[in-house]
Image (cartoon, rainbow, N blue to C red; front, top):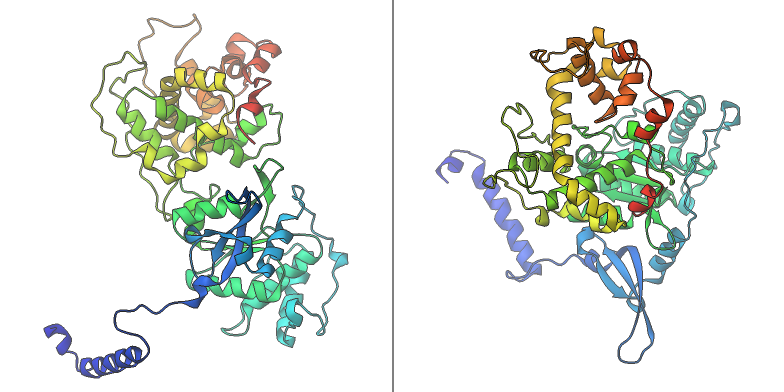
Length: 484
């Protein structure tokens, strides 16, 4: 208080504050909180459920309602009779959309037609003349495959012009998905203008982890006849979010890329069409399952947990226990027990539900096999990470680019050549083996032998093509092991 009183303006500020509080008490009792009427207004319907009334046996319909000005996690199930019919029709319209897996190509430059001032949008909204000029300029550059920046002064309607531009894309068959990254203070305005000017299904991706998981479950993807999410079939047309959310939840932009999903896709022979995101989800679920049944070294367990846990609020997560590996670790269930050092509880993590192996994995024999091999899986993952970070290091791009091993500058210990696999094995073979494991994976010996960038092709000759193919063969039922 003494510090505040030194400010000559404090008395005037206190006077204004007391006046404002007195005016507020005029409308509300001091022990009451002002009630926001938006809390009882339906914002969106997320899902539909059918059941039977226990009293009379008649069918009952419930809708999962997201309320205005409340987060997704506060959504509630409400009787059909209590929900606004207009919101029900809007929900039905979105649900009836045919899943689009193929993307429409951008029209050729010659297809561009200049918009006239009479051009209307939703609710008969029209652009001002200078706004129309801006949208036409954006469209011209878009049709001609040129990048551009709309940089009007404050208050001239850049948001509306941008939304009108996206609507014109939508009109020619390109239904997004469109990503809008904006400051947190402006995303409500973006959502309002999208709903005012367009019929596009627009969602805001923000909030707590629980809310974001609900958005992912109910708002992101279309579902098949069995209620399963269809990867790549987006339910929304436009998604509004912040840069922090992109860093936190988007796997393509996360600061730690812990897997080479594209390589797995290119080598795997999957029955079903899969995306890089699908592969990442499967690998994360495999490691979650291994953690649940792991009985080995706690340092490995802690490292794997840090590796696969999604980053929070865009902050880089520092991986523990990944470097050195100078202390031997138990490699099986008979290893010496180590006092628990884990600071996490796998059963309390909310994100685990999204990668729940009991939900994703359908093949019991595969789960049994994975349980038996879980220690080996986790140890190999840790060793591969160590190989990438501590051995290959900044030479990774050259390795993956196809540079020959003699041009790769990596450090590795030179051991006494007392026991070697064959007479021609030397330090260059050691080097090629390390590079080959990073490049092709564990136990891909025939693939490494056939790689012209390594020394083995020259020293030992090319292996049989069938042997190479066998190393990359995926079991016929592999796509059935994972749900969806």
